[in-house]
Image (cartoon, rainbow, N blue to C red; front, side, top):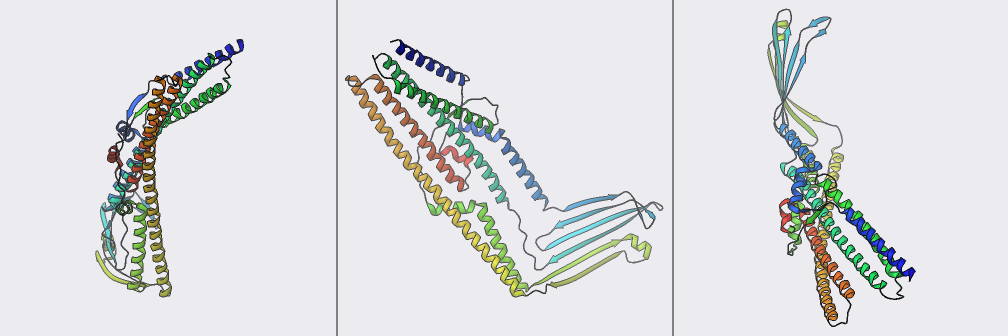
Length: 447
């Protein structure tokens, strides 16, 4: 009898210590947070996203500057030429892109003669035209917009994933706590039964305590990751409030394939490489290896007029044809090979994208099937609970048996809710692959 009392006391101390540990771990009241609130915080306070947006804005400004004239100023306060002091000089250079074939460059130089206190301007203006130049590849605004949307979608997916994981872990902790309380009740009932062997119950109790501790540790890690993602102070405890809309997505591979191909930067890059390789091959066939350029220029030298009496304004126009003495058949073969390789790379990229699309679509179908299965299990668990309650009313089942069946229903409800979340995540992954804007579409599946 004394031994049994010691066992009961030990179990009670373990229960008190466990409850005290978990109550201290959850001393702070959790803050309820919706998906909309989490996304607002992520986009406003996430440092990585803010730096990316800043970088994109600077890249756009620099790309815009390429379309405008580039002016360079240079100043020379003084110097010595041929043993004589040279006065201060300065120059302004102008470079202006006029398209894939034209280039315009000019320089205006001004010198100050210290003895005569007189300005001596000089300048030049050159215009070049390349008859067989390849068109310049310029990054389109569409690609920049795709980069921004890809970053935005990535942040949405991260936020949703952390909220879902946190919601699941909170539900798992609730299940573990319910199972622990059930074991406490079983131990209490065993203590009232003479000569009852409760060794297995005490082992289950200790194992359940450890499982609850592991769940709590994983929960704390998720809370920390979410606070970092949202840019808030550490130690904040969140309680995600998220629900999934009841919907079923109809999958059409042909329509989705068009979206995926249009949204892929890798595919766009492969298409651009193939187009460039074909253009270079066509240009080589048309030019037969010749490089034909026209150039013209105007030069103004006021100082030369005073010193030599030459004309102050000189101009020139010229045509230059250049060809490398290299067998053209080999050059054409090399370019044909490059075009064939680019075409193969494009086909490989298309096959990879199609395989990825089919994999994501299969993920959506699997998630839908799992959701249906979990719904059936939930209905069966509720039927089991109703049956057990009827048995209890008839005196054929104990309160502990009803409690155990009720815990099974809670687990089935959580599993069904988690399956709905996983199905919504699989749909978001598909939309992300299609390049759609998840910042607005996410609320069509999760609130």
